[in-house]
Length: 250
Length: 348
Image (cartoon, rainbow over all chains, first blue to last red; front, side, top):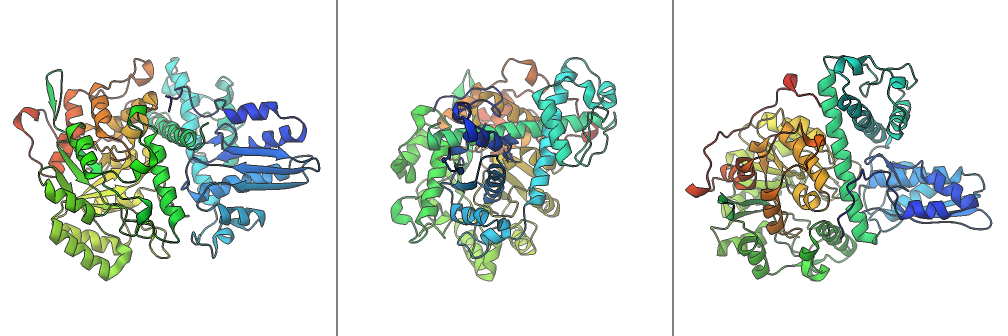
């Protein structure tokens, strides 16, 4: 294996990005739809992560998408979320008459694929299968990881400001509009909206996962923790990308 | 022992294996899991240096000679601690059992320590097996896989009452070190197998036990850090951190090390190669040579000096396992866990 680039891994262009760029018509719109589907753990979309094994649209509008993951044993709860989200996103794409979205090469592929096609939910999909029963739907899991993404995203937005000389007092008083526009800031706003936390220009820049403002006294520890979350996301993404590369040669 | 620039490093590999994942050992009807498992491990190996990669067939089952050569002759390891992983649902004789490990250890008693294991879901029969195993191999440690399948169960928590029963018994029987796998997925279904709060509870309630969290809670490094910083008997097992990141992603490796040094500290970090996923040689040499990249990004992480590297590579684990350390490999500087006081946390 070649040593991978050390640029921030999430969002870098891989084989999927090139395939997406080459697509036209409905297929191009399907690729765009897939960009809205995230791996909640890595806070990155399945196209950026090269999780799309194949994507095609027939003349009569049937979209066929195969997803793939770094290992045979990737957590089935996250896998289910991605396949279900992809099914919803592709189904809603203009020009698509039917979506056939499946997961390949995974120990729970059969259960997940049948369940997603039947819109059975996670518990319903796993019931009676060889891979075991599930006891809860995945809304809480999704929320937990969106909260983590909020923390990690706070680090990406705020640390450059601190490095540029902003003091804790400055940051505690800042609103979202005070931070320079960037992909990281737009993503942070999106995660806040998903959590039901206001993300307008006049809303505070730094909030905790419950939406509460973080005062100047609590700010240093809050930011120190935010940085740990970001390091965790990057480390996980590194390992997942390395595994995917070993498995599929991408 | 590894020597570089006049410094001697006593090396304890506190997390390694001697497995049999050859097709002859696959359980009929569960072949896809046995195969998927070892292929997943094999993909991890690809994150190490190219010259250490093995063909899958060799990787599935290394010979005794190869293990002895790669771990001790070439790998600089003084003492290696076997951790077991049973996986009997998929592997007929188990994947990496304390029986198989114990046979090899018997031939080289000065080179190995063999840890036992238990599964609280095995009830009274499991307790008897555990007690018999402890009597036979006299281990100081046990390895637990909280996400392992067992019958209809897809996992357990250290804080479950049944598990507390085993932990109490373990403590009575003289076991001191509980290694917990909190790392890359092994097939958790919908239990949150990465959650480390169960370790937090158990560490508080069992002050006579040390809890070494292997793979530092990946993919939840930060949750592990925030917990470990408050529990003096919780340690960071570096298996996968070194093997999976040091070569393939040196800058992210540096950040993870920085986080661990900040929250957990060099007194509570232990080296583990995860052999036969990765050979110890390049990991030991790499850690001895390691320093932060020259960038402002790493400026506020704690430094790691020669003494710190000696602790991580062997001295910390030697202390946990009562392994005698030659005088010329010891250090005199203070030891013992130091807690990070949250109120005095440095600014990011």
